[in-house]
Structures are given as structure tokens and as C-alpha cells.
Length: 195
Length: 195
DNA sequence: AAATACGCTTGATAAAGATCAATCTACCGG
DNA sequence: CCGGTAGATTGATCTTTATCAAGCGTATTT
Image: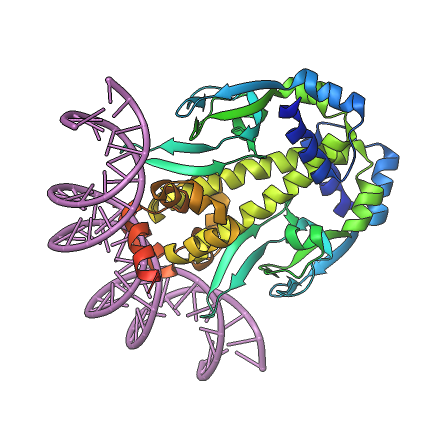
């Protein structure tokens, strides 16, 4: 039960609506709790992303590996975020991304079909999805603007502003990759900006 | 009538559903045709984006101006795309962006309230919005990945792949800005890559 | 037709960031 | 307690990209 409370709270908060007892029952029936251990993969490049997962506890990285073997981190995800490559999840095509647990995780996972059939009909859930989609659009737009118009140092400052807990929680080399920098460059940026 | 046909076609294509005569009537009633001349602004930084516009004809750029007076182009929009700063449009807050016509334009515009009240209840329109939202999420994800993991030259190649008509239609300095490069750098990239 | 503005190119130089290599520390796991 | 691994830092060097300045061609305006 406790696992699901986080999901209920989240849906109600974002939608601004209340979940009935029956709604909660439907969510509890179709979302499956799953544990993922640190370093375990939720999704591997080339596989279809069959599930999306609501993160109850823990954190993960979404990344690609280039020809030189370097990781590029597209996304860092923590509690109350959704875990998936949505391109693969929506279209059922092989994913270009890997998703790996950075800490031991507890998630609630579900397939696309079950969402469409049983979950979307819940008004609060559907409303939550709309709000989430708006938030994502806005965040993506901001991050893209930062990418094309700011220097590495400025992007780092923005990250500290927008997601201060990331700095505490994740090692610096992952932060660097998320910002599109090498660990060495981020190290030097931090050194110089503390002047 | 002709103006609206493009919108009808677009909604039906993306939603996979058919618009009834009544549906079309509702759309025709609430979307207002508007002409915007080349160099005219659809939105100015600091203003609230009250309208979203479906582009029937023409093209526009969405951009910011930094402290040094340099433009940074976040988006280039053409026929069958939507024109708006969605952060400002959804939340009714002042926009950080400018949107300016690059060619004479014909759009169909509407306010947020009218969409919510009259347009969203049309099932095909609502379905179209869901598909559009998915497409946008996927495109934003891809562009972000390119930004953090590719060089300028590689990003240019991706642009040629994904939006070949952009190269024909827009001057090179706008393409450069969209890619997060200076016009000089893009000029040199093109020179060297034709080797 | 002249004037002008705009976009593209090229050159010289500077800044930002990547790469490669080495070292240092801290934190496990046996 | 020891050895290993992961992360952070620093230095030297190279590559990529920005900046500033000038010149050129072409379309547009008057």
C-alpha cells in the first residue's frame, strides 16, 4: 500500500483532482511494483521499452554510448518522475537509449496497453498527463535554449538554480555529461567560478 | 473556406479521425484568420502569448536576444506547425521569446480559453493534440541529445537529414543560430565538409 | 541607376572545451 | 588490513568554435 501512496499523491497534486477509492483500486491493480538494484538496467539500447515506471525511490540515468565508447547522459531521473524512452514506448520501436539505476530503486511499472485501456479513463490521471506534458514541453524548451545560447559555465549555474539537489546527489562526471561537458572541463569551471 | 481546409486536413491526418460537418463549423467559428507581414511580430518578449496560431502559409522564427544583442533561434516554424510560446500561452505569464514572421504569413489563431471550452471537446482535435504532444516530446529529446553529444558539423548533417527543406528555405545565418553556431562557423563547416 | 541592406565568405586571433596522461583520495569488498 | 575501483583534480597540448574585421555579390528600395 505504502508504495502506491506516492503515486496517488503525485496524480492528485498535478491534476488538482481527487482519486476515488475505485480509481485507487484500478491503479493498484495494474501498476506492478518492481525493485531495480544499483547498476541494473531498466532498458537496454536496441530493446523496445515495454514499460513506463513511476519512481517511488531511487535514481536513474538515461544515456547513449557513442562510437568512441563515451556516455552521453540525456536525463537524470529521481523520485516522482517517470522512467521510459517515450519514443520507444509510444511507437514500440527499438530504443536508442539505455536506462540504468544509479541507486537501488523501487518503481511502479505498467505497459502502454494497460495505460490506454484502464488508466487513462481515470479523469484525474488523464488530467495529470496533460499537465505533465505541458511541464515537459516547457522544461525541454528551456534546456534547449540554454544549450544553444549559454556557455558551459552558464549552463552549470542554471542547473544549480533549477535542480540544486542534483549537485548533492550525483557524481560530478554525470553532471558534466548531462551538461554536454567532459568531467575535466566541469572540474575546471568549478575551480574558476569559486574565485 | 480554403484557409480552413489545411487545418481540417491536419487534424484528421494526425488524429486518424474524421471531422463532422458540425466539428468543422466549430473550428471555423472560433479560429480567426490573420495575416502577418514579413518582419512583423507575432509575439514580443515581455508580452503574454494570448494566441496560438496554426500556420497556413509562411514561416517564422522564435528567438531570444542576449545581453550582447545576439539573436538565438530556438525554433523555425513553417506550414502546418503551431505558433506560440507554450510556457506563456499555458501559464499566461510574460514570454521570454520573440516570434517574428520571416515571410508573409497566413495563420488561424485562437485563445487558450476558446480551445479549452469549444475545441478540445472535439474528439479528433483532442486526439490530434495527444499525437502532437508525443511527436514534440520525441523531437525535443532527439534535438537535445544532438546538442550534448554532437559537434557542430554533425548537428548540421542531422538537420539536413531531418529537415532538408529548411536549408533551401532559410538563410544560412538563421540555420547557424538554430544549431547554436555563428554564421562564420557554419560557413566554414560547409566549406570543409564538401571535401 | 544608385544606394543600401543583407547574407556569405575569408583571414587573423582569441577563447572555450576536448583529449591524454598522471596523480590523489576515498570508499568499499575480501 | 590490503588491493581495487571510482571519482576528482591538474597539467600539457590540440581541436573546435567565437570574435572582430574586411570584402564581395546580389537583391531591394528609392
